[in-house]
Image (cartoon, rainbow, N blue to C red; front, top):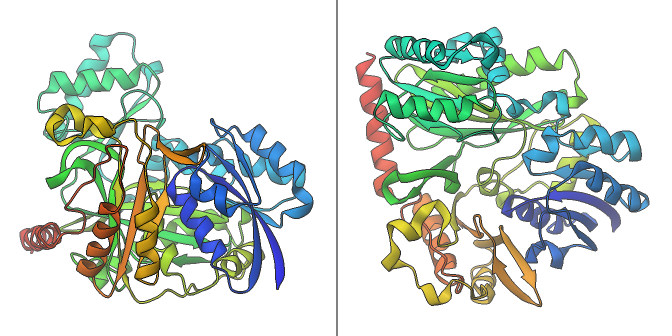
Length: 470
């Protein structure tokens, strides 16, 4: 069996899912060299070399690649920060190790303003109304307040406030969710504005889906649609998070979508891709399209695009790959990836998270076992279930680190459990059973990810929106 060395730049369970997909290869003897944000217990076990780079600094990642370049055939990057900071540009220049991720120039999530302007140029019909506010254009707070309020008049207050830089300020704020008064919206705006440009765009009504596609520079291979759950608590309550869970149906579309919706998304992405690639653009290699769409009564519109795999959404896909993931990566590097074969199955992912995540302990203090907070997390019973059900359950540690042989939770989402089934409900039950087998750390999770009630609500909502437009 041919030996293959792979560099994995890791943060969270998204990278653990990649590691798992590589280690399931039946065609290659895979040796993994993992640059990780912490001592992820799954990655430590699966790697031949594992290094912790807590800030994912691209110079340190490059030094790790250089030190092992004779044994590494290619690399892949999961998290956005090193992609935005040009890890591919640096590693390829110094080591000649090809990386699977877009170059810095195509890390489109680095600027929400640049995204909107790009889409306005290529696919203006799917852009919401938007206006960019730049600090250099205003001399006083009174002047900027008048400009923002005038724009809110046009939008009838239905606005979304976004900082240009995703890591700056207070992040995204939505009218009706985060504030219901202009004064509060403006406070949120100014908290972002002091860090740079802010975009205020029209709030769209609809149901969200995530579109992901592998790219080899010449071709894009679309993956099935997934649905992410951003809000912290059951019933879509609480603050936005990195994503509490996600699901995919047996086929390519979600229950509330139509085939026409899916085809329209493909047309939109192909327009952008055609403009970008100009024949063959290896700089796009990886996953340059992880697009948040919102489905309105008039069809899909773009909320944002990212230049890396989705977390959690890629984990709905990787566990059901029938194609060998190593072969998929080689085809990406060779420029001849035209299809990816998947098992015909539904998948549901749910995260278990620490007691303070999303402010849960403040809202529901009586639901947290405070004696468990500092205790290690035991994944043993969950892993036994993966064997019992023939890998219908997958368990991927995320913001968790190995200390003296035990697993301890850090600050973010701790561990994801993916259920795989013949339908969404069966997959959901597998996910929940795996979650309930995880003990320690006072972890909690949303109980309604991919529930029948939530899915039926989405279907009814879309039916109502389409009727309005008839």
